[in-house]
Each structure stands twice: as C-alpha cells, then as structure tokens.
Length: 278
Image 1 (cartoon, rainbow, N blue to C red):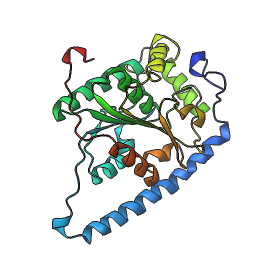
Image 2: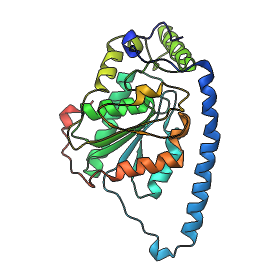
Image 3: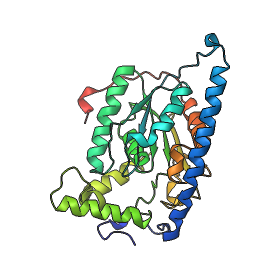
Image 4: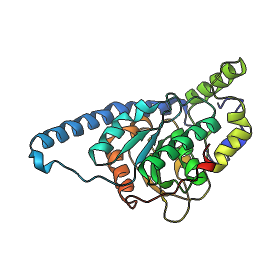
C-alpha cells in the first residue's frame, strides 16, 4: 500500500509496487558485495605483479559525479567510486549526507555542486545516480545540459517513482509526518504530492540534447522498485542481474558503468553561465 500523501501521477497506470516478499531478493546483495571483494583482491594481486613503471593508467577526461539514492548518502557509492578511480575516472561526491530532504532543494544543491566541478575541471561532467539519485541526476542533466556530457541511472524508477516497496512508502510517510511536525530539512508533503513532486517528475523525463550519453540500468530482480519503471524510453536501457542495493557495488554493474562512461568524448569543454546557478 502506498502512503496516502503520494500523488497519483507518481504511480501511473500499468506500474505496481513490488510485493511484500520481493524485498527478499535483496538478500543477494551479500553475494554481490562478495563479488566486489573478490574482484578487488584480484586487482590488488595484479597491481603487485605489475612493474611500477607500467602501473600508470589512462586518465579519462570528463569528471564523474556520483549521486546516492533515497535514505542514502555518498558513502553508499564509495565502493563504486573506488572502482571507477582505479579505472582512471576522476570521481566526485554529491555532498548529500542523507537523501531525505526536499527533492527540489536536493536538485538545487546538486546543480551547484555540478557547476563547481565543471568550473574547476573546465569540462562537462558525467552523472551516475542510484535509484532516486538517478532521477535527480537525470533532471539536472535536462535542466543544465551545458554542464553534462552523460548520465547513467541505476534502478531509477523514472516512469513511476511511486512504484516502490511498501517499506520505502512507510519511510516517505514518516518523513512527511515529521516535516509537518516542524522538523526541518526533511521531505515535505509538497515533495510527494505538490508542485515540487511534479517538477521533479517532469524534469526527470525531459529529453536530453543529441550527443549526451544516456543509459538506464535496470534489473528484473529488483526487490525495491518496479523494474519496468526504470526502463527509460529516452535512454539506452540495459538489463543486469543484480539486486536494487547491489547495483551500487556489483562488479558486473560497475563494468557496465565504466563502459558507458568511457563512450563519452574526453574533456568536453564547457562555459559555465554563472548567472544560472541555483
């Protein structure tokens, strides 16, 4: 059952929230983090066996900004960030400590962070977002295409944000109630049923300019959101076999993210319009 505060347009006809037992599929995250550990151990052995002079890798041009999902912070994408850096990507945190606040405020914070990175590196930025973080990243890419060279979303229910497990629905409802009670910095009713919700939803579905990379990663084994809502018709949709949580660290997903990031032309120059910063 979805929380009563959630707007109908966030759960369009044809999409459903995963059943109560679906969350059991998330238990495979233990295996997925085990795969990461085995891959990391193998990479360390390979590095030790490689002469120091031959260890220098290729540095990819465009920086990468990682955006965490609902209830999560930058630490949840720490393993992915480490793996991407080992592959030659320069990664940046979103500075979201816990993604529980107003989505419009989070988007403004993310836009400011994006602009700062683009100015520092004098290049467009690639965005990688998990779950709600992917929706935020996708919306920012549409809002500021001058700053973004590519977007990769992982388990992001772009088409139906309300098609999530009841445990998330309960969390949303709790945040709304606490906000009503006067607790600052939390998701308010407007974020799930008002203008804020509609703006975030519509921005995440806007088309991106030609030449901007756009990949949506989804899994039929997702126990948190309806996988069908993650298949963005405006993106290149790619299926993986991973849990919702595991997409953040499964090495098979990381390999796919690396491939998509590597397709973007390196060092795409950018001129930042400071007057548009949020």
